[in-house]
Length: 181
Image (cartoon, rainbow, N blue to C red):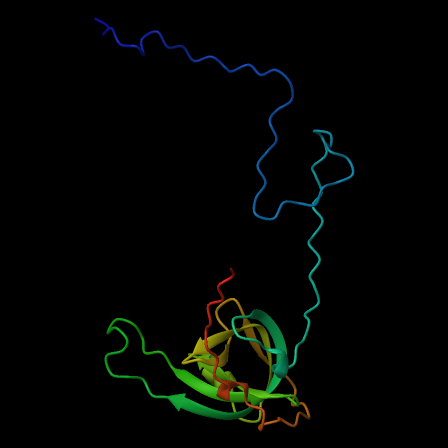
């Protein structure tokens, strides 16, 4: 005996549409609009690869607090290992190696925070390219860092005379709230 529910009378029928299908949702980076709005069904739509932008190299003296995405070539002047506090990391995590390196170019110098595998690349005297570097604030002063989205590349030694008397990490910054009236 069949139960008398609302699903008993339900029939599966294909839905009919009037007109063209709705536009498809685009992903994060939609392709650039083409000259023809619709290609024929037989031909697959051709995607042109996105052109990579050439990196714009900046000098150390152009770095400002709270900025990111910098690409620069610097020379490592000095490296100091930061001792790990006992109990700072959980017992199941491997201890993080952190080192503060003084890096710079002919315009200025700044402290770079190297973490884990980056410590091995930042040897005094080495010339490195920092890609997608960011400025972190630590106790009111600037620190240069490269996170997982960036890259450190050791390059051929360049003849860079680092201007050590202009250390941007010695400048203290203070966050000021500006109230507009």
